Length: 238
Length: 344
Ligand SMILES: Nc1ncnc2c1ncn2[C@@H]1O[C@H](COP(=O)(O)OP(=O)(O)OP(=O)(O)O)[C@@H](O)[C@H]1O
Ligand SMILES: [Mg+2]
Image (cartoon, rainbow over the protein chains, first blue to last red):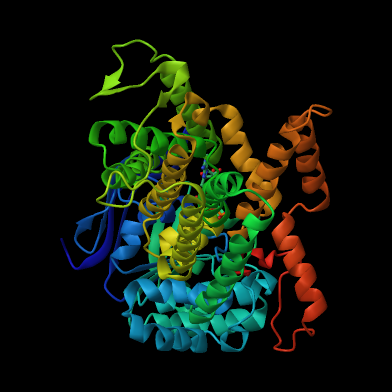
């Protein structure tokens, strides 16, 4: 393997007659921060799910840190040290914030270190004051932060985030930018995102998806100026 | 965790007192059966209420425990090994069945159907074993008539020292209390926490790196072992095991006990089982009204009036009247049932 920590080769995912991901070769370097963009239905989430093991690719290969993970289940992928946030926020509504974060910390921490790990992760996402609240009673933005806090508590070296900014207020998005930059200091990060403002704020390399394929890969300003990108986004302004 | 165990201990002490004075009101022979049914309900209450696994075939493990005990007791004589086998075999059977279902990623509906079918298969098979060719060692399976005449529970090591009557009642009562405390401890442990998290959001837990299938299989097996223990105790009490233990009616009753008593608690299913089984017994003494009709009416009333079950409903009513309004700023999701944190 090269020095890439995530690599796909000819990755293809078909649903019946629909080819959602079409022969994608993708590569991510260690500690890289990468954005995936593309119009609705471009196949970003499907690509993401193939990497995390939530979907098994129709053909092609997925490699993570030297392991071929193409047929692995999500818990096996996670156990490599991968933190995953799905497009639909996924938290435990009937549990408190602390219990949610505990769940993440418990798997990777010896018993005596769990409490401090949990406290630290809640602190970094500013949810400490909500520690004893039921997650189901929180606002959308707070729940997103709880989920990110869970990901932090599991100390991943690779973080995959599917639309973390969706449904957040402008102020929350600004904070999210700082959090992502913070996370990317000690982890490689892949973010699927629609919000161009947000993508600009975190910079990094951008991969553009369209109709299941990679259209181009470049710095954010080059991507935004590219006529092909403008074309696929035509009719919907971001 | 420590607070929860203190709470569980308190519940166990109250239950111990109730079980100790109960013989003043109801004969120990009947009480023993109520305790055994309580344990059977607890086994389903654990996997359904805390693991989210609705098993329509809890009776299969109950019957399997009883048959294992009876067959082993005929072959071995002394009851200690048969007793242990009566727990171990249902555990292993549940592990195999659970692994098949959970690793096959069956949906909840199919899970219900498969467990039901397995129970019916046992029922049909055991009913068809009347012929002399159906023997295990020296034990004849006996078809519809079941297996009578096996060694009942004895003091370990002394086959002539039978445990029966009042002593047998106290033994089953203590067994129920121990199982209750062990299960409470299990639920308070990380394993229990994660099991409840899987019930709530399996994908999230998997994405955190936990193997939900293995954990559900283990929880299901523990439920099978407890149901097997109940069956083993039943065999010694009834002194006969019959295919009826695997019947649809038996399976349905366990589910009804849990619904009426209250899911998400352990005490609920136990109390539900004891009350309904006693009612059935009392109604069976008369012939004015059909007892299935009465039990059906109770189920419907409970589902309509107390959808969470008797114990959680009474529990929150008590909490409302005894506790001052919460002042710790804890916010709760409207409608979110705190029943699973009732620790009873
Ligand atoms: N489970 C599925 N079954 C059938 N088709 C699916 C399934 N999941 C996705 N698709 C299809 O695959 C294509 C890509 O969907 P995907 O969700 O990956 O897009 P996306 O880029 O994430 O879009 P969005 O920006 O809206 O999240 C779409 O045409 C979608 O309808
Ligand atoms: Mg998507």
